[in-house]
Amino acid sequence: MYLFKRAADLREALGQEKKAGRRIGFAPTMGALHQGHISLIQAAKAQSDIVVASIFVNPTQFNDPKDFEKYPSTIQQDILLLTAAGADYLFLPSVAEMYPEGVNGSHPHYDFGYIESVLEGASRPGHFQGVGIIVHKLLDAVEPDDLFMGQKDFQQCMIIKRLLEITGSKATLFICPTLREPDGLAMSSRNMRLTPEQRVTAVEISRTLQWVKDNLADRPFPELRAEGLARLEKAGFVPDYLQLASGSDLRLLEAPENGPMAILVAARLGDIRLIDNMTAGR
Ligand code: PAF
Image 1 (cartoon, helix red, strand yellow):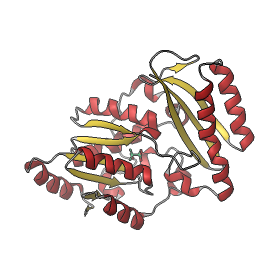
Image 2: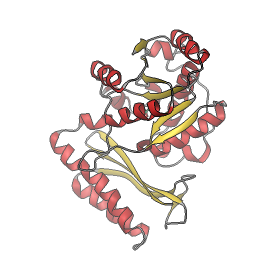
Image 3: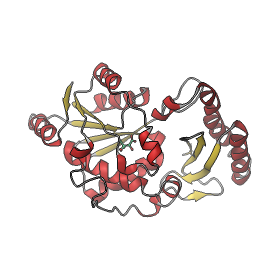
């Protein structure tokens, strides 16, 4: 696996690959890799000729500076995992490389519309603008044919779909299923920060989602939401939201509708904020 720290050098190397007619697959990450990330690499290997991963903990998408400071970093192990998974290129830029204008410099503003105003957008002001800024820069550096992201960040996937339209990128977005621990906890880099006791409690988030999903056809959603939130609180979470939404446009729903839907949850355990979702309907 080749490692590049400068966008210009990566662009040059990938330019050669493209000239040779190879299809470029790209999985952007913030490191602290787990099997969920590796499944993105595997999906990229199946779809594309060349697999590029990036690791960059993006300061502009953290609305909480403490969350940024405490974000886990396991670079040595990440490199081993990516190599074993068969990634061809790793882009590992510095903050100065990605933000020559300065982190607090002037950045574009993206019109993501409604999808930026709810759920994670409402709870984490500026978060999706930060995601847009960095993914736009990464797309410029890699110019992928295929882009691989995890369904665990359901709303982020919708934002990225919109970003691809806004920026005129020709990349095809592949949304890969959430990987779960044997007890059901969605894999997440933030799980590394859970204490053993918190780790035991954390499973309640996926259990609650599954319980809502199992009861969706039989009980009014507002009742399920209230009970689900109470269940999370009882387990020791400070819940942020538990919502049912249209899977196509993220409209919040008070009752199931025909078509794809998602049940989405965010809750805090100590200072660690976890999110998860499950799809429902068709
Ligand atoms: O999902 C993530 O890890 C990040 O939000 C991303 C897409 C790499 C942008 O920093």
